[in-house]
Image (tube, rainbow, N blue to C red; front, side, top):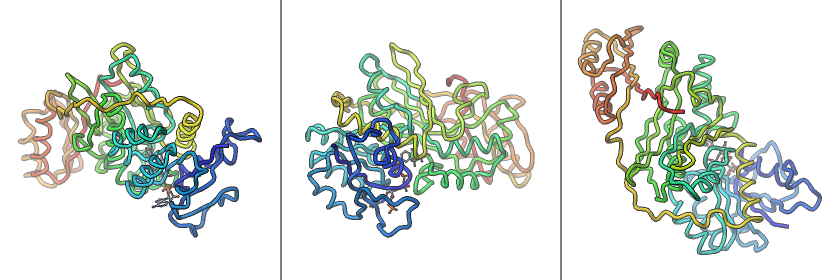
Length: 414
Ligand code: NAP
Ligand code: HSE
């Protein structure tokens, strides 16, 4: 029987334990189950827990785990960079397979850890780190056997999709829905990562690194959060026939990449616009297969644990599915140059002077008959303009208005 050490016993860790030791998963349901969780690492061993396991050992000492030669595989679901990064390296060096749901560690160290796993003849899998239960990593690896992937777009964060859905469908308040998402176990320990986009940034970089064979770096990502979106924006979008979605996008052109994470307005009849609640959707474009679309629960205990445990089963039953992965290409980011879009803009103005200055700043870009003024707010959409011109306009608007929010309008997404 394979022995598993589980690092973390929160939302994901509990789900993993339930599938394996409580035999919720078919693979583990027989009496001679092929694997079991032997150790669980937690930060605070005295914490009150909804469930206390009695068939394995709870510890706050990683050394006990790493020094146990019976442990074949380490499943890590703790969160944050340290000490998880160090523990993963230590496990690989001790020739234990590693499965992790930690996107922060994988995003920053995907090449180093992949090489370390190869050097030590063990497997490193991280399906649960991106898209919750969606098997997107294995699908990218499969697609790459035949295709060159040049585009990845999608909704990659369950918490923010849950918030945007509740704001649009139930006119709920941003802060209150965020609290619900935290209670449901969707949000990160620090939810800033969700609402300011660091989580999507890390996930899209992991996918881009795999798809484009290069270590895509977070500093190359054009990132904007959704924390200052308001119900006024949601209602205005609704009246125009759109909804807001938070989209991660990675494009490859002439061996250079462009990665962005931004709020986007999508027409209500588009596929992505109808992916709601904590669901995620990811679209890939391969030069031979064309468009492929994957959808499923992007956050939460069972969906994520399903992905993590599938990886663990693969680790001890199959050939290494990731042995051909490399990050040898030296692609660089081309930023946003050459990308043209139409934009939605809202600026809050508290007096006539601010109103006039706002209109003056934007005069050249405002689409004809597309300006509304109500309750001290100016709303307008632009003509097609360069992304760099939009950034310059945003900087100018911020100097004359109280609060400015903008989003790209997309008509070509799935
Ligand atoms: P969580 O509910 O906050 O649980 C974290 C667990 O890790 C807790 O049991 C905690 O111990 C333990 N832990 C944290 N720091 C530790 C340390 N320094 N030493 C030992 N144990 C430590 O987090 P989660 O939602 O399960 O997420 C875990 C990981 O999965 C994160 O990387 C997250 O990004 C990723 N993920 C989460 C989801 C999701 O839907 N929640 C989905 C995909 C991926 P205590 O119990 O003692 O506090
Ligand atoms: N906080 C993340 C989300 C968890 O909401 O998508 C899944 O990665």
